[in-house]
Image (tube, rainbow, N blue to C red):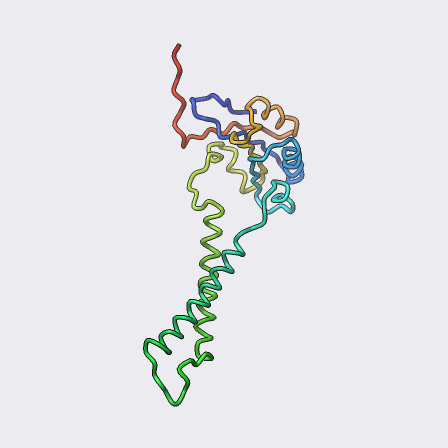
Length: 195
């Protein structure tokens, strides 16, 4: 086990348990949820079936953003063309009616797809907290293996049940390879108290 929560006076972000396979990580997440921990996250080099549910994540909101963007794009495109051809600049070309809806369909479709895709990307970035050039878990050198062959469970200090010693003891019962203390170097270090 590495990392002293009080090293260099930085506030503790949480504790990180390292595993070498997906099954122990899923088991650890389920046991942590059963123990009452809620503010936690798991990291794996590939998607794991059931991990989001085990973490207690709610359903994804991105499809709703895509739907809203698509509806806004379609309605906006159709309204823009209808306004310009009926009210703003009406032209009678070859006896065609001013509200010639078949000619509006291609642009309506294109703007629906464009705004739906742009709102989906924007929602994904926003809801994932991206871009995130730095996260406290990056302070743990072993975390570089999270994209290759290691699996991590982080219990954050923001959790109501979090206590550095008790949580470390709980994580030790999960048989991890190592337990790391994560310093939040973005926060100001604690002032040394003199007595």
